[in-house]
Length: 317
Figure 1: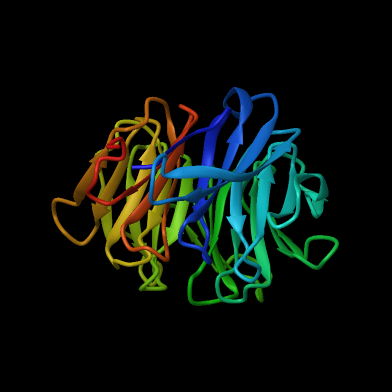
Figure 2: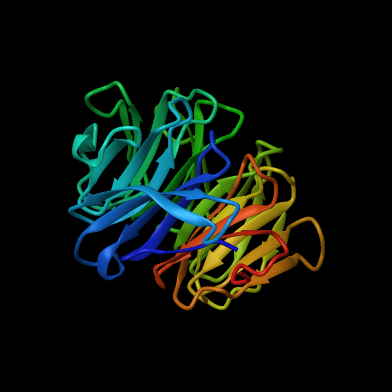
């Protein structure tokens, strides 16, 4: 299976929504604490080594997340440690990039998510406790959502409703927002410890997963959230990222500070259906391809990016 070695620590990996062989990786020097960053755009190939870098962009600060545009196949958004949000056009040479840079967040920007239904806007979540809404062609953010009492680690659009998103915070809540409303429409006190990640089910727009420092993943129905639909136990440390499958309704992927990537079927009793122990440091980035069923990617602080097919060994050559 393809493996890419980055010069810095991996933070995020995202498959292109346009090309099945393309993915972007966000990396940071010195575990993201201090130093530079780099964005790698990778292309998968049938022969060895299986993956190669097509272009890379150097940054003056850590890159914590990347998100592909849903409207332009060569454009991606980057979330940086200096509070900036940058837009890159991979069709242009590195000296012509970034094509845009926004400096509004007061602290590190931890996540970026492009609107999959509207395709004209994106969200960023920051350690300054806010979420911001942006449009690529606007010189400044459209709106700032400020209700969380601590860092917002992730904000994700609902896959069906172009105005609705969820945000996961260190204040132990997930909030549901509608951009047409003045404040959040729902507050879910999901965990007793920091919530690091959230994601919407791609087949049921009322189902949401959260992951936490408490080592669990919880699956919620936002119509009746007093108790979770499922609690997934199996990780040994904080669960850094959670992601619903774009192809199977009940399949959830996660990665953790226990260095593992796990696959879960939240609708069955023995929910853990796959565990991959290929990383040798914190596993912090995970994605599942929309275009190729069962194709997964992960990255971590071991500076490696793995791409593999579900059920296969990520380290198998």
